[in-house]
Image (tube, rainbow, N blue to C red; front, side, top):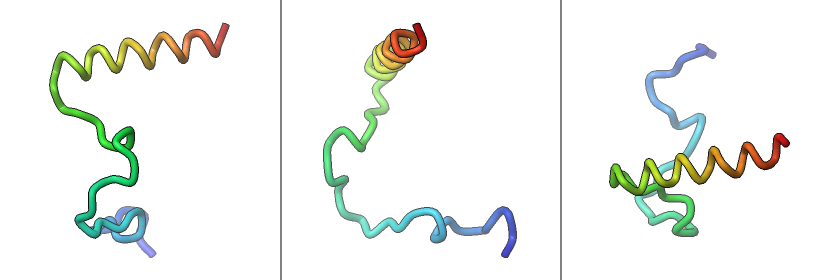
Length: 49
């Protein structure tokens, strides 16, 4: 078993079906990603305090 495999079958199976929940898919719109990142950072900071 090699540490880095050529394909990622070991890690996940992609059967071309949509994600089970919309939350599992992350949008690639720049504005939304920045907003999402800020939100996540804020929530993480809350947990750490």
